[in-house]
Amino acid sequence: MVIPAGRITQLRSETRPLAQGSTFRMSGLAAAISMSWQATPLGPPTPLVRWPDLGCWARQIRAYHGWSRPQAAARPHLHPDTLKSVENHLSAPTPTTVDRIILGYGLDHAQARHTRELAAPPMDLTPLDHLRHRYATPAQQARLARLDHAGIACAYLDPLWHTVIANQRFHHAFPAWTPTTATWPSGP
Image (cartoon, rainbow, N blue to C red; front, side, top):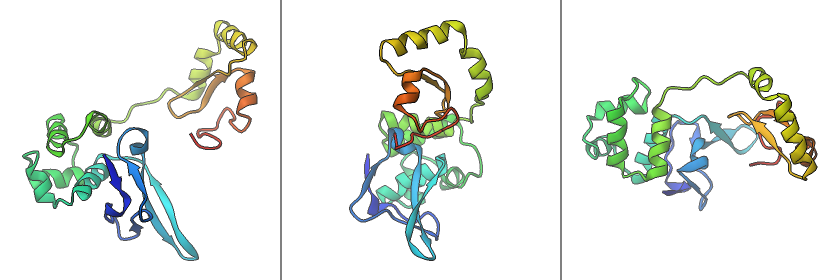
């Protein structure tokens, strides 16, 4: 589902819709963050990037369709208070509630997966030092050297895009990407 940015309603009093005519896709990687705009005292609005959450996601879909909370709750046969508790983070939704929202809102496969991921509890990530110790074996170092010799840049990254180990070709190809950099130097 592609949402025209002008249809996104204000989620908080300090936010504004995106620039007129711009769009963003509400599934896949682009849905991993939600953007809004905050007015600055000395200049134009600046974008705010927020961690994704199920409540914000449910409100964005509801706003896109122009549904009131009771109208949106009627589609998946939920009580409006249940939908309110999901949107306002008052309680964790049950898997049945999440499935009802997915079906009632008519979400596609990618949006359904994203919704389920947002509803799931956070995962504990292995510390970067432990990953480096685990993957910095002689066998992995030899593999990286072979790939380097073949002209292939290779790196092992953690889920937050930190470099666990990498060959020299990777470091030459991405000089701004240090072992602790968690973002693409010039965008993904």
